[in-house]
Image (tube, rainbow, N blue to C red; front, side, top):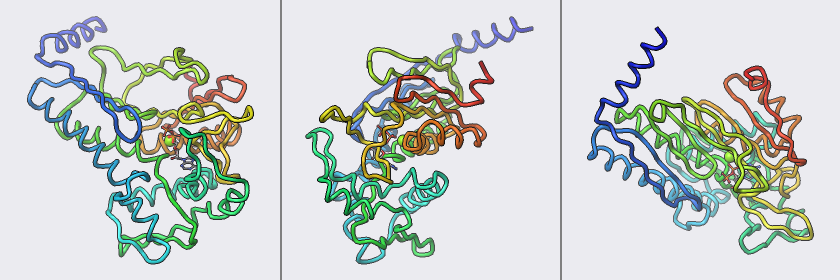
Length: 321
Ligand code: ADP
Ligand code: MG
C-alpha cells in the first residue's frame, strides 16, 4: 500500500508539465527569494513580479530610512497630533503591541527611541548620556491606537518606532498569500532571516539550514520542513565589535543596549509574522525565560544557541527526537 502511494506521488510529479521557478532580489536591506512550482510560464512570470512588487510596496510603507514612508510620517508627527494610518499599518502596530504585552516588554517597537542612534555600518552608537536619557522613552505604552479613527498617537515626545522585528515576517506572509490565491501549492518565500514553506520541494520536504552564529560557512542543523514558517534572529546580522564588546541590532528595551544572552534564536510557527516577532522577543528574553514562554505555546518551537555556543531546543522538539 505504501509503495503504491509512493508511485502515485512520483507519477503526478513527473508526468505533470509543472516547472520550478526561482527569483532572488534585494529589498528591505536584505536578500529575498521566491521559489515555486507552476504549470504556466506566463502565470509564473506574473507571480514573480507580484512577489517582488509586494515586498517593495511594504518596504516603501515601513522603512525607517525612507522619509516618505508611512512609518517616517508617524515618527515625525504622532506626538503633536493623531496620525491617520492605513489598515495594514494599524494591524501591524496592534500586533506589535500584543507581542509587547505577551513578552512582558521584550518585544517593543519603541526600542528605536534609542535604537535609531546606532549605525552598525559606521560603528556608531549613542553616547551614555543620550542612552540614559532616551531609554526612558522605550515604552510601548506610549503608543496609543484609536481603532475608530484608524490613527496612532505617541504620548512621549521622544518616542520613535521601527518595525524591523516584524515587517519582514509580514511581507513573507503577504507573498505566500499571493501565491496561494493563484493556486500555487508548492513554494518557498524568504526575506533575510524569515522564511515560509508550503507543500513540498519536488517529492521531498523543504530543507532549511540554521547557520552557525560564528561561522557563516557552517550549518548547525538542516531541518526538514512542511507547512511552516521559520525565523532566525542572530547577533551576527548587523554588528560591530568595539573594545571586545559586540554591538548588534537587537536591543534590550530595559537597557537600550544590545541583548547579549544568546547568539541566535530560531522560531518555528504557523505563520511568519508570529515567527519573526517571536524570534526577536526570545532573543531579548534569553534561554530560561524565552524557553518557558515557547513551551507554553502550542505549535511554536525554538532552537536557541546560547552565549557559549550550546544548542537548546524546546520541549516539543525534544519529544520528537
Ligand atoms: P533580522 O532583521 O536580522 O531578520 P530580527 O527579526 O531579529 O532580525 O529583527 C531585528 C530587528 O528588529 C532590528 O534590526 C530592529 O529593527 C528590530 N528590533 C531590535 N530590537 C527590538 C526589540 N526589542 N523589539 C522589537 N524590535 C526590535
Ligand atoms: Mg524577528
